[in-house]
Length: 312
Ligand SMILES: CCCCCCCCCCCCCC(=O)CC(=O)SCCNC(=O)CCNC(=O)[C@H](O)C(C)(C)COP(=O)(O)OP(=O)(O)OC[C@H]1O[C@@H](n2cnc3c(N)ncnc32)[C@H](O)[C@@H]1OP(=O)(O)O
Ligand SMILES: NC(=O)C1=CN([C@@H]2O[C@H](COP(=O)(O)OP(=O)(O)OC[C@H]3O[C@@H](n4cnc5c(N)ncnc54)[C@H](O)[C@@H]3O)[C@@H](O)[C@H]2O)C=CC1
Image (cartoon, rainbow, N blue to C red):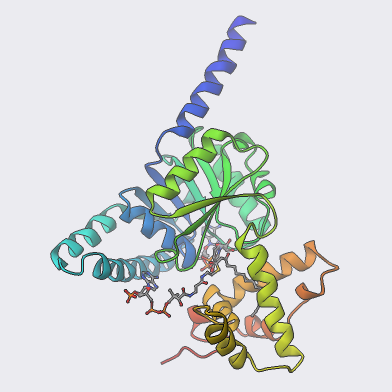
């Protein structure tokens, strides 16, 4: 009896103590728009980062975009000292490695952050395989835009307390906000470690309960959907809506430009998920034009065409 009590206490102590220790080794899964951005900012903050994706070709593309974006950051940060800028880029790249095997990459991680496709089943499959192999102290987090963190965490029953949401914004190297999400099970140690990690990356973390869209997307998704409905009614053209919101409301991009920037494939995943979750909300009903674009492989900026054409 005494021994088993001791075991429980020791296990409880080591898990929370480890979760509150600084995160140094990060595995980012998904080398697309968001994962490559998070890997970049973590590497430039001095962390050891392994970026994982399904094949070497995707990872090659991610490394090229990270190198280019580090160059943009360095140009600004070391305006008057280009040699220091080059050192900064080289140092960040030296902190970054890649892998196509998520389980292998997770074995030495303090934090595993998932930024893969916005599909609950795919996220479940990933976290369920990682739960078995990652160290007990490792925190698991999702960068989901619209799914429930608690739902996602069900695939990793071993680390209910070490699971949370870390929602970054696109483009990650530029956008300062980080939404830190705790489920009813997220421990204080895990929450504090996520907040501290966000600050170490130069982000401004805010906290939100695990509610649909957290703060930003709870407000942003209905706005984007209203823009589509306005155009569908024939009240204004998409181009004029974009001009209106930039020049009249001071937004850096109009809603259709922003949807192209986020990716129309991801946008469709988010909208379809919310249509299922909120079947009585007419705003989230299918958008014919969006579905057509996605079916044609026109995903926005990342494929060269979406609502607008980006091909040179
Ligand atoms: C219509 C369909 C509707 C369907 C309904 C459903 C919708 C569901 C969608 C929900 C989406 C949810 C997504 C999500 O979860 C959360 C998000 O991330 S939302 C997106 C948030 N982001 C924004 O709102 C971005 C808005 N845009 C901007 O801030 C600027 O336009 C931007 C910074 C992207 C570019 O600025 P711009 O001046 O236009 O261009 P420049 O190229 O000159 O850049 C300015 C400045 O920034 C540097 N920079 C840009 N990108 C990067 C980068 N990747 N890395 C490093 N640096 C970068 C660039 O070098 C410039 O620096 P200077 O020193 O100023 O030259
Ligand atoms: N695009 C955006 O503006 C934002 C997206 N998000 C969220 O971030 C996540 C990723 O979005 P994006 O980067 O835009 O998507 P993306 O489509 O650019 O990248 C996703 C990447 O994940 C990879 N992938 C898919 N399944 C995988 C698996 N099982 N293992 C390893 N890699 C896998 C794909 O090959 C792809 O490279 C989504 O959950 C999305 O909702 C959050 C904030 C903003």
